[in-house]
Structure formats: C-alpha cells, structure tokens
Length: 111
Image 1 (tube, helix red, strand yellow):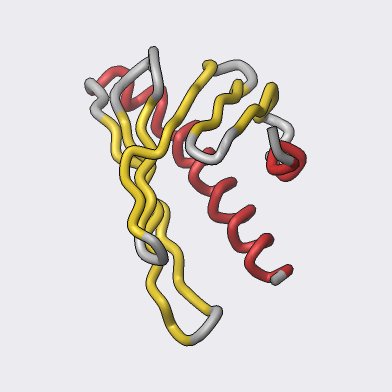
Image 2 (cartoon, rainbow, N blue to C red):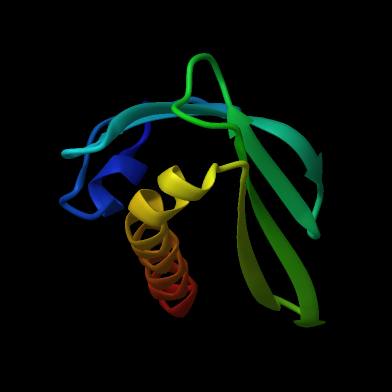
C-alpha cells in the first residue's frame, strides 16, 4: 500500500493499491477494484474493473507531451449504462472524474 490514499477526497475510503491495481470504496455508492489493462509509457494508461463492478467501464488517462517535464492530461471515463442507470450515475461519475482531474492538477503543480 502507498500514500496515494491520503490524497483521495473524503468520499473515497478504504484505499489499497499496488503497482498495477487499486481498490477503494466510494461512500454511499460502491466498492471498486481497478487494474491496469493497457499501459503505453508517457502516453496512455487504461484501467478496467478487476472483479465485480456495477457496470462495465474503463478509465483512460491520455498524456500528451508539451515540452520536457510538461504534459497535458486527459481523463476519459467510458461506461456501458442503460438509460435508467445513466440518469442515476451521470452526476456521481462526473463528480468522480472532476475530483480525479483536480487531484491530478494539484499533484502536477507540486512537481
């Protein structure tokens, strides 16, 4: 386990991680376990559910170099949701991605 869990927002609890996997609980929503499904150094990382998940999804992080030690990052959350589940999950999922973006920005500014 690493110290990354200390950087998580208060909605994320029970954080555990290794080099290729992480698991956590989003308060009031679900337990999730993710593993790296694809990794291209300095350009892309794709996470997929590891085990049971409430729906099929992927979390993709795309990195584009701007200059040495500087890059743009884009986070894409792709999910297979039926209409009803989409209506319920859209706002929490958007909030989750917004939190990831804010934390990534915060970490990048510390470097």
